[in-house]
Amino acid sequence: MKFHFARPVLVLAASLTLASCGGGGNETYPVKVTITNVLYEGLVLTTNGQEVAVHVAPKAGDPVVVTFPNGLDYGTYYNVIPKNGTAAGGGSQPAHQNCSTNSFPREYGTAGQTASLESARKPAIEVFYNCVIKAYPLSGTITGLTSGNLTLINGSNSQITIAGSTTTSPLPFSLGSVPFGTSFGVTVLAQPAGFTCTVANGTGEMKQAQEDAGGVTNVAVTCKPNS
Amino acid sequence: MKSSTLYAGAVLACALGLSACGGGSGDLALTVSIAGGVTKDGLTLRNEGNGEEIAVPAGAGTIVFKKYLSTDDEFNIVTKTVPSNVESCTVTNGKARANYYTVYTTVPSVFCKIKTHPLSVTVNGLNGTGLVLVNGSDRQAVTPPATAGAQVSVPMAPIPEDGPYGIAVLSSPTNQTCTINGGSGTMTATGPSTTPVVTCQ
Image (cartoon, rainbow over the protein chains, first blue to last red):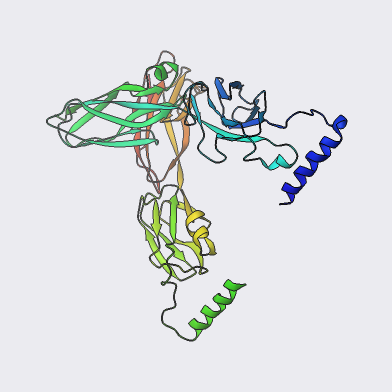
């Protein structure tokens, strides 16, 4: 309540002493965005026909704060999203990353409707985005597994058990997605009864070529009956 | 003021020996969110407020105490026992007087930290540079020993108890080929179930 009384008084005071007031025009609301975990270049945010490029912090991953060039007039609708993307991501994103927001304060609203903590001195619109490293599939096929259960792992990261089949070959399998820049190594944790299975194309890194290919999908497991 | 008066009244009623007391008569279901991957049975939570205990089965994401709470009942959730592979559990938002906010908005949660154990790989015959071993996302470059071919012990990142590990060669040393024996196994309470050995020649 106090705040609401104080504001008109300030405006009144300002209009009575025009010469001493900087600006003199309408009060505008700067749009300030805090982005966490930016590790690569490429993110462009837009709102109200303005664009701002987000660069990696001197210490990669530290929060980055950007402010759009022009403030918004009271009552103007804003919607801060990645260029050609949505609040869920997409569009102009950092390489190997996806930045999104789904928390309060929301990325959209009306200037002056919500205000940041520092609004008593300097009204601002605040929006928050967070970026995560994209992960890509690690999958392949198993041939020759006609019975028993085969357990495959990617180190200590993920695990899957596939039951043999007399009707389906090759058998598809998929381990947990692997983040960009991370290594993987598919090995057999438990051999199926009566078979010995070996893994080919199971070790590598999720790099640019793998990202461009949409992941690693050619891990080949071959099972042969024990003689 | 009003609520503390009511509370005092309730205590008095209980002291007078009314059978309906005991925290079972309210309508707030005390729910606890379980985080940190409880992979085994053995976690027991206790609400010190009314003495109720509940066992959390392996893999559970949430658990609900059976006794409902009334507004203003005090609850205080503690871990009574933890699974054998858990180092410790932390309770967040576990102590308050029950109301819609403390029960449903700031949901009490339990985070359990799984024990980890060291895993090292023995490398024999190494004389070239460039060997990199991986256990999934964990990557360790191996420098050749001062004396070519001498045995090297390569520490990998610690492995969670009861969790699997699988060592693979990400890149081979110059002019050598390496094979692995016993590279995949499970970390037990007393150590790895296999002895991973890499032989380069």
